[in-house]
Amino acid sequence: LGFIGNMVQANSIGAAFSNISNIPSWIIGIIVAALGLIVFIGGIGRIASVTEKMVPIMALFYIIGSIIILVSNYTNILPSFKLIFVSAFNPKAAIGGVAGVTVKQAMRYGVARGLFSNEAGMGSTPHAHAVAKVKHPVEQGLVAIVGVFIDTFVVLTFTALVILTTGVLDGKTTGIELTQNAFVKGLGNFGAYFIAIALFFFAFSTIIGWYFFGEANVKYLFKGKGLNVYRILVAIFIVLGTTLKVDLVWELADTFNGLMVIPNVIALIALVKIVKESLKDYDENFEVKNI
Image (cartoon, rainbow, N blue to C red; front, top):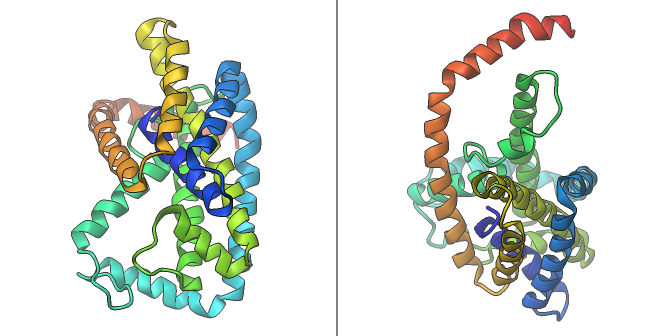
């Protein structure tokens, strides 16, 4: 994620700001990489300080903006939900009668995008949860579950509904451009700037979070050596991500994400007994005492 995953985030930031300005994507990539290096060098303290302020604020404004659009297009909400469920089980996706995709393709991209978004089962977010200070490990496990729910069922659902209710889905436009078109339709020209700024906060906080995940592994594998090399490589991949086509970047990310799942699922199966014991201890001892 520190390398390939951050290419996707950088690509989205570059595309979003290029759509609202004449600044080339690679220049935006250099700026993002420079800002990232400043945070990276500051260590986990600075990373935590930046993300804990950015994430709640950006999520709140994004949800508010989405609600405003949905309220103005409320008559399209139920038809949009119907379209989602019908298309999910229909061999052909209903995109204006144009040739759609098969169920197999829909599942492939649905799982891939969901995995990339919430990271459930990849073994990446435990790096962040492991450094949290809690009274019982199950507490942090519950927080992790809530995080997946908020990301997938709240933020992503709002995004999907905004795109569908505004009617910008044409089967051709993809990525951040599609989301920007939806917000422009709902909020006027301000929508493009709103998404660019919101996306920057979403993506940049993800970049520094994923950097930390990689840093933890570099420290473990190389006994604290090579951090500067790792930081420089992450910065290079950030810039590189803004120069590549979005489809290529996503295909690379999907491939490497899938490779991460395999060893993690094996580890989860091996740790089932420990998980059950921890949950039992929490239910029988800890939770009752702290009610």
